[in-house]
Length: 298
Length: 149
Image: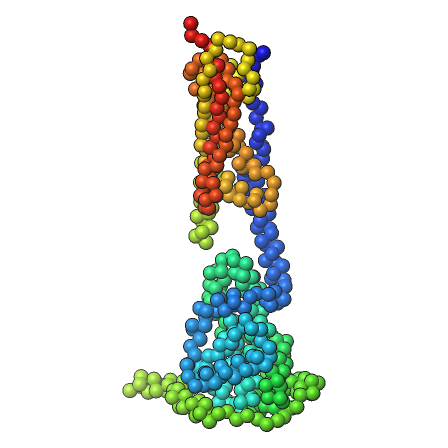
């Protein structure tokens, strides 16, 4: 018997593909898949917003929430209680929670932001005559949260980063993107979103009080005051106002056969007093400026 | 961003050094295989009909580490499936190096043939996350050495 060893032939046990070529192919493929994912998520941003867990929204909004300084106190507790009642009246999903921030400022506005944070300014509360009117504003902001409008409005970038955060990719980046954008407090919802929230708010008002009286008080008051020299009302810029809106709200209520008027609930006296006290305590910005000017002059 | 820079640097280092080491190793392997051609090593278990031979156990052992680039490439392969070509050359080199070391030992003993050659492969760092894996290959067989008169 004769034994011999031929020289092993090269390239039988190895594949002659260049590693760099394989690397480019594979990483290109991976990047392509991610790009397609982002494109699809971005394309259906509005629809996907509903599938982003509310927890993700809450965890991301935490950094922002700390900047919304709310005043702990009677008014905030009262508003929170009212908002919770309205939230259950509009069947807010259990995992969603509303956090009210009452801010002692002349600003005539209210807004809803990521993570269920709703900000109410004292300036707006002063203008509302009844609990029903306040409830309408609150229910409207709660409805924004309910319909996930803050996420939708932040745009595709935010939806994509939130979607990525939801599947565990770079959740810290997502927070950064939102935090630096500074958009959270200046969210402007679309006309369609405002209308959707109006209707949902009406529904919760009806379920809570049995009628929708006082729902349009705010808008009617604004329409009346429009000609007057009133301080700049932020509510106008963030909540586009028109006679159409009142007409549409009323038409919707009629369509659903909800009574347009009923017994209005008064704002509790201690709350009203507290708001008045806050107004006196807050130094009006104009007079503060004037005081500074006088100081400089002297 | 910093993570990305670190990743790219590691990939570049892995590719540069890994590629250089592999090229050098293959050149060395081919040259030594040619030099040791006259010492056959076979896996046959049947003793050739030559008597008057001494038997000795000979073995060759090698550990080769995978570089960062190869591991990354294999990781990408794990997503898409298919041949993990980046590990093929690693194992090929390790097997041939182990046989060569065994042959060198037998050659030093004056052996004419190594029979019943077997190989063992094991992975070092098995299952430990974020560690660059290494492969160990052991080749062993029975060297037939002509009796010294």
